[in-house]
Image 1 (tube, rainbow, N blue to C red):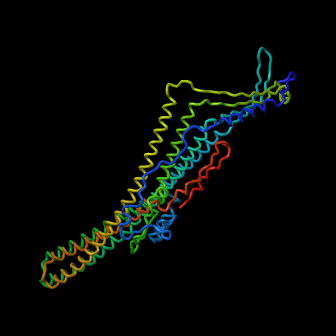
Image 2 (cartoon, rainbow, N blue to C red):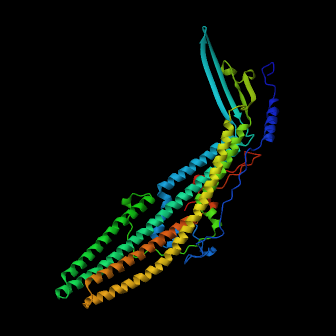
Image 3 (tube, rainbow, N blue to C red):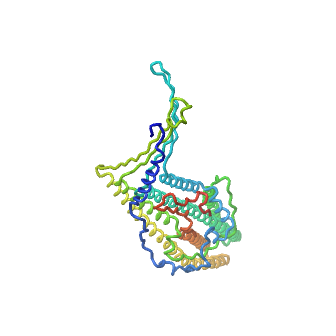
Length: 499
């Protein structure tokens, strides 16, 4: 200040600019740069080449990137699946978690900038019989330059966490879609099972009529009629019991689309969706096609950034602060030069002893990174296992279906032959019962195998990522280390791709 109370011009501004430039030149980023660790990836799926009816992927037959369930060509399934994004509550929770992670990124980015406050004080007091007033509006600002890259590492880590959360959201969506498809396919098989039992009951009613006629003609015993009646009633009871399983599946589908079970009714149809032909592709693509693997990879990047954040604790923190304002006893004097006040300063703080706390934090961060790497590699292995499991299931079930189909045809033929023999009086009715029971059991087994194949196909699509791709993760913000203010924003939550 000059003798007249005026500031000494702006001589302090170049000093501030020089110090800021010096700090920027001295700034560096502490900690390891992230490089994705390698994972064991086979050249080809072991089961893909031997699965009957399955072939390597070709560009023209890739899974639909959006409505992957359309491979079943079922309009009702398509309508139900499209309600997952609208009303599924688990998916809404995952979406909220992503928005939370996005907000954490924005919060961390604020560390690049100074903070500013405005304060205004107005006091009127009486001391020793004298009344006095005091007025003082002031503005203050402080800034902790990111000398060692702590803020940058924090932002990068939180951004990776947000990307992992987006992967979790995609995984939750895929899981809900897969569960709905599985439940729906089983519901349609239940419809088919009920029709099978009702058709068997119709045939058994005809056998009961024949046994009754034979009894009236005196060529059959009363026990034949009783056995025929028992078999008919038992089969009708089984057909009714299928309704319990179907109702439970319908209720589960209602909850998946966010509706009370009372609001959803799925009418029976006459056919089961056909088994689709789905290419398995190459194992190397699985790392990009499964959202859970992508999320695990992003968590490795987040853990890697945490190491750098922990290591910055070994370096001093510099805080730049400044205040400017006026202070006067009357409002009229607030704008006078003599009432102006300002201050500028820098503070350096460095921990010289902490009994090893910082070393422990760094070691903990490194251990967390190692844990994330192991989790990622385990996720990759689990993904390969799930694909191989479903390919093997489809291969084995295809062979089983062929064998069971022959058994069904043979048992149906045997049933008809023995029924004719009974009509001719050459065999006992017990032979008819055995033949009918065997034929129905084989038909039920064939339908159960068909259900297993459909469920395995849905599980395989889900294991392959359902057509999802890592490119669907939100774009990464580019953070320029030498100019922390130059970065691109993370897309808003509603920009996340929808199915």
